[in-house]
Length: 129
Image (cartoon, rainbow, N blue to C red; front, side):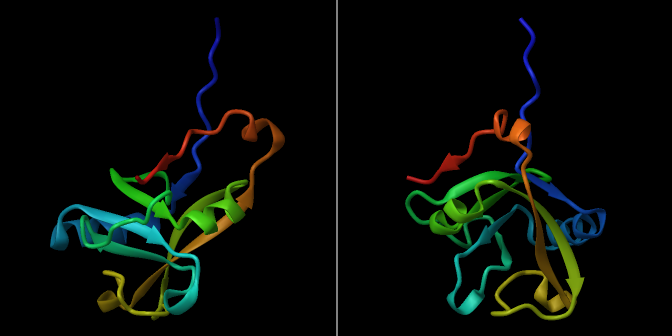
């Protein structure tokens, strides 16, 4: 029986990975959280692991360099048909709570819709309890 590899919901650019490596050296284990709006907007935020606790039923869509990437439960319902690519830009994002802010950087996500074939074979999400 042939099995297909599962399709990842998340990827990262080389430029973002370089910033993550820098943050790892300074802060150790990290986590990412993308909220559904309000003060922090919908930009992904980077925290020290344990520095933010996902709400009940938030979705963990994958990992970047071993660090969990969580999405607000309501935002995930809206974006669950999309692939996320984490990128980084020069400048200040909204809120300023994310660990890359002192570096003059801000994380950003690029989205693309999954193809019908990809939708049939996506990696499962983990939900917070």
